[in-house]
Length: 405
Ligand SMILES: Cc1ncc(COP(=O)(O)O)c(C=O)c1O
Image 1: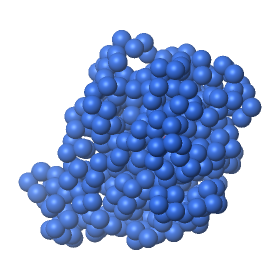
Image 2: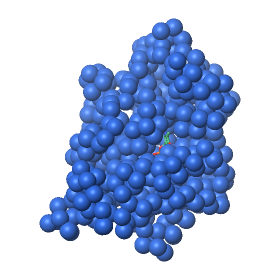
Image 3: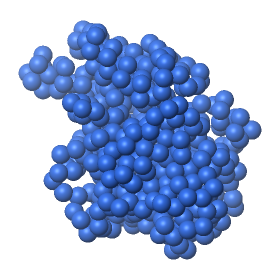
């Protein structure tokens, strides 16, 4: 393991060789058909638009790499994060399946549900989940869009701004004691007691079909990127991980699209919640407990999603844990562009990839560990915009509108 000021990093001892095919075992979790179905469905929803992929030559030059790309999810369906793609898609899927027995065994289409034809069945269903903000916002939005009831559990340190953003979509929001992982268990217990359906982004013992729908929904982001890059894969993709569902989705979609030419996958976490890095070092899933106190709110998760880990544990080439100060510097760097680069509104969790690149400038050996050099073409996943506008303004001194102006 490499340690430096504010950073821990390691290569993945269990990384699959580039030539290894994606394989049938991994396809039992995430697969081409699942990604395809999600994209077909979600691209027809009201408000769908391809999220921009920005090239940042100014920042690339400063970092000493050949190219830097940033997938900007800050306006996805008006929810400000890529998470809009997952939770809402899983809500749609479960409602469509609930209608099927009344529809000759055929799951209802989104248009059919939106028309109100199945209102009686759909409105009797309650969906629930635990969230650190963005996933709950997606589930609440999906529930409101398709017409079912929604109860969302948030843990002690979820900001008031994030609570209010979920409530805006008509969900009942309940704050519970403890950290994110405690709130996951609480949501599960409440669902059992009340006959609700958990729409979680993380898998656990006996529960994985719905989180797999969530991960297939996220695949829209990666499939858009493959099209936007015109078939030329980057050399590296830096993906931030909370429970690892996003990382698994990105890894699977790129492995399926690019095979042995897929980019090196680098998983980035906060030092306070580095369960992926620790699991890689241990060779098995390891949980991190405690407050998981980090400004990268979407990554404050101490337990990996086991099904996601089955993919990430092999697909990742390296793991990097960074301190909050690098994320803060990264948010500011995106808001204050260099040269002809566009100004980018990226929240603390959205800026994690750049945080790791900034750390690689400070910490001797990190760039080499990542296999990065002057010819690298690096993809960052800008998974969120100013999901908490107050925190964003505190970091940058500007509102999102001022940054974009
Ligand atoms: C904006 C954002 N990016 C990345 C993540 C990480 O996703 P995952 O928990 O699937 O690893 C989250 C999780 O909430 C998030 O909100």
